[in-house]
Length: 134
Image (cartoon, rainbow, N blue to C red; front, side, top):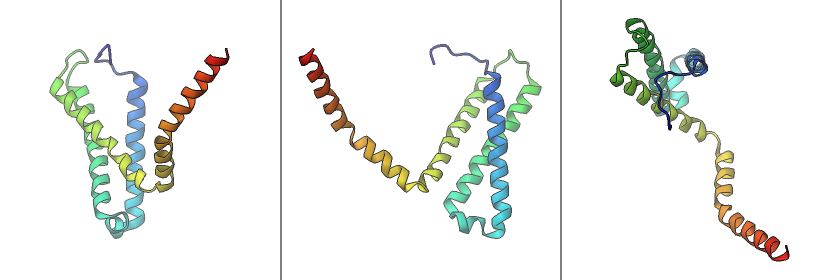
């Protein structure tokens, strides 16, 4: 970011709250569906990980609500903002759980990445040929 600002666009705030609600609702529905077998069906590691990430997201949203009511918009508590940014970064790890189920997609992405060297040399030769003819 070239120009740091303390003002977060309203669209980002709304989308963050929507995603928080959707993730919490999804987790709640899965816990209700699996009942006592939630951790055994999803795997103990992934179950605990998902509950932790969604719980941290809910705590972050609650902290933001409390912080917004307790302070004016012009005052900035930077340590609080750093904590919320760290909590947001941890949520990215949730994608690892999804990647586990997509072996075909992972194979396709690996194949594309492995073919980049050949693609580079093919494009180089093609540009050399076009330059030579032109």
